[in-house]
Length: 502
Image (cartoon, rainbow, N blue to C red; front, top):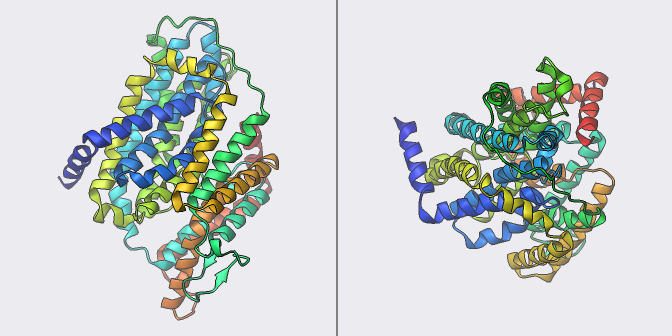
């Protein structure tokens, strides 16, 4: 009965005109940036973070969340019709979706992608609603020792699941930790890593790093790549799949939903990892794996369900434990911090309207996406004719204005541009910036809880192994570290990411 009352509270909160409007704006923006290659949800959220200063907290979170899962819908449209994935998680959708389009089955591919995404989004939203209160109640037993161990576990997971070299991922997390410690130490009052710059005494703004590493760096990278966009000549005549299409697709949707929901919860996971894993799984279980890459509808259904399930289940650790599972969730954590909201179990108890309103908005947003995506396919495809050389000046201006509006300091704009060039260099060196952002967000949390735990135990490190939850998390972290060093596991991981890059 209490669960039903909470859902009613959530839908009544999410269904207000203001929240519905921002849910629609988020869904439309998400679809738009999913359609347009070279922007992506991470960069978009970074650019829009300053705007959330002027919005109600729930409306801001609803809009940002809508952009994230809306991008999964939009990315599939261009992946199928143009063989040009607008979002990283739609890369595998293009393998079979584009082949279906060339065979005159673009409508079936688009419909299966939309219906699979809606089903997966609904299931993962229900999972969040069911698991959220349980995890939040469990997290209330967490003390400083448990949060320290959980943060260590999260950083290790982010290292394992980051693409590319393990050494590079560890290095990126280390840089993020150092950047998170810049500023004045609260306990001693001394400056750390400021190099005498007065502007750094209060630390580096989250928005500055986010916009620089993801917004400005993305622009520089895209300007290097020549634009090549060619629409298929086949006309979309039928949107509804055949009975045979449904028979082949629904098991893949179920498997993709389950796999995506699980991988989205893991620190370092999310939509992209879920989509690639689902495609690999479908090839493994198929009786005829040779049909993949030639127009297999399972190759569209599984990844599309997985990426949307992974996108929405990644909200679970953020809302219940206050731990972001990927770079996008780190952006949302930054948005919550901007509004004075402390992520974690206290949100559900202290601000139930925000917690349940956000969950309800996800289902409403998925329904909106299902309704607006298929009828507007022609519009989304026409947007691809807009040259990027006309888009990037407006995006760059928006980045600079947004950064300046946070603290009204030209220093922050210059710092964001510096991080933009640094992000560009990281990408040229094949260093993923996501772990850096996670390290930046989790670094202060790691230090704060370490100090608190040591104060409580009067300097004895045994506090981390005397508490069962903390001990279990440290054992899990040690096991992950050992697995990372095992040659067979390391080789499998590297092969998986080589396949992803291909």
